[in-house]
Image 1: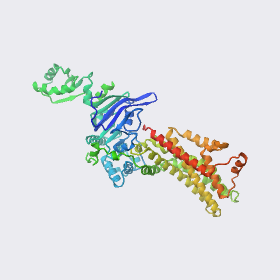
Image 2: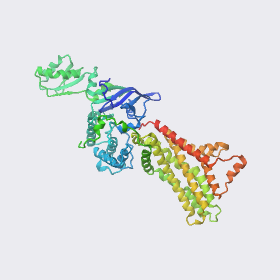
Image 3: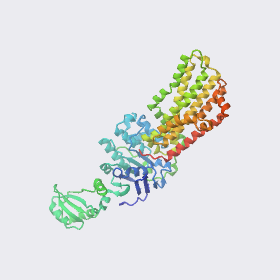
Image 4: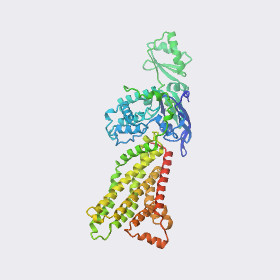
Amino acid sequence: MNVAPAPAAAVLQAQRVSKWFGEVIAVNDCTLALGPGVTGLLGLNGAGKTTLFKMLSGLITPSQGEVLIRGHRLRRDVGLFRRVGFCPESDALFDWLTGREFLRLMVRLMGYDGMEVDARAERALDLVHLGDAADRRIGAYSKGMRQKVKMAQALAHDPEIVFLDEPLNGMDPVSRREIVALVQRLGDEGRCVVVSSHILPEIETMTRSIVLIHRGKLMAEGDITEIRDAIHDRPTIVALTSTEARRLASSLAGRDLVRGVEIDEFGRVVARTDHAVNFYRELPGWLLAESLPVDEIETLDDNLQAVFDYLVGG
Amino acid sequence: MSVAAPPAAAGAAAGNDRAGNDRPLGLAVSAYWIAFFSYREMVRRRRILSVGLLMLLPVVLAVAWRLLDREGAIPPELLLANLSGMVYIHFMVAIVSLAFGLSAIGESADEGTIIYYWTRPLRREAIYLGRLVAAQAVAGLLVAGSLVAAFLVMTVGNFGIISLDFLKLYVSTCLVILFGAVVYTAIFAAVGTWLKKPMLPAILFAFGWESIGGNAPLRLQELTVVFHLRNLLHNSAASTGSMPNLLQELKVMLLHEVPPSPWHSFLVLLAVAVVAFALGCWLLRRKEIFR
């Protein structure tokens, strides 16, 4: 299911990539093109999500097909890593270095020297709010701080493409909020940000755009709502709060776009529709025509968890 | 977030084609920085203590020589020749190279820290070279420390033994041993890059093949590193004119085995190190990072 057209200026492309380990096919013939913005890479454990993520980020080579960054192969043209920031899931770090020393090394290895190294390291530390702990050894950092320093090294050189593997692991709620806001801002700035996570609400706080991989195959790609709307065998459930619930329910019940209506235990009118996009387009007209008051409209199952469950059969 | 967007973000975001800038970093500069930080990392490893303690063995032997041989039955040149030929070349150099060579790339890949080098615009050769040079420097430092300590034990308060011949022998011995550490570390680094569990094969190579092959008859022994190191040592000992090289002479007389020239051995060892380096680079380029 691919509901989003390939971005005109795809920054990152996977062209019919497959990866197998012996007789096990981890990723099977996946094609995708990612442009600016945040994209969540989702999948159950063992679905091939990690393998696809590592192929996209140049850590492993596809058995077949190729991964391109602006038309060039990352595995072959390692100079392209200047455009890439990578925040690994692994907790391994240079524990004997201070946060500042680590970032300076990472910036230096990106090709910067002199004052630029210090300036970029400082800016990256500020970006993740780690300035106060910059001179402490990484070995003494908490899990959340380690996560932040990994994030900082991925961003210190202003990459065009950012790969974040489980970026919120071990973070406290305040840090989570900061990092989520940072990720959203990276996407708003026009960077191509790929976030891999198995915690769906985590992804949902960062983006509505997802790539879902299941059993090694690309199952869905695009906006969550659009993907949800394309799942025709599962009607979208919309809850409407109204002071005239009964009149609203009977009005909706006769519409072609509405498959069923009921009033739930909270007094809300719950309608099921096979075409959510058309339903939302028509709904204001219906309400106005019959002077039906509505205080709140909520789609109960166009969240990521629902989409995920419908698609992978959870 | 209160932090302003990085200034270059707009350029990056617009997909600014920085093609001219998409070249990997220079080999020498990147290898230098990797070597510099890797050296600092390796000297902090716990194993440096255990290996360092092992490296005291020749020093202990030198102490025993000072304490027990008061009559001068064993000349210092003979002690040095035995320490270098039997203790350092056969044992110490292999141990220290094994400890730091195997882990140069393999451990970093297993732990996951190699990812921070891997995701930079660095040639894989630069990563390999930097890590290898750091491992060789640490191995060389431990060996050199042991050699200096043994020398001090032999000579302090016993300055009569210091002659020009002895000094020449000592310096040339040190150079051969350090060269041996460089070659062995290069071999073990390649093995560590190649195999997921390299310890057993490396031990079998260092203490199996090198011991058996190194003492095998005829030209088979020329296929070992230890033979060529010994050949260099024998030549340096013979060139000082201070120690009869009986074993070598006996072999020449009985087996008509003419040992290769020191230059031959030197070039063979150099070639082994270069081939191991090239192989290691090739393996690293093909390596996949799963952590």
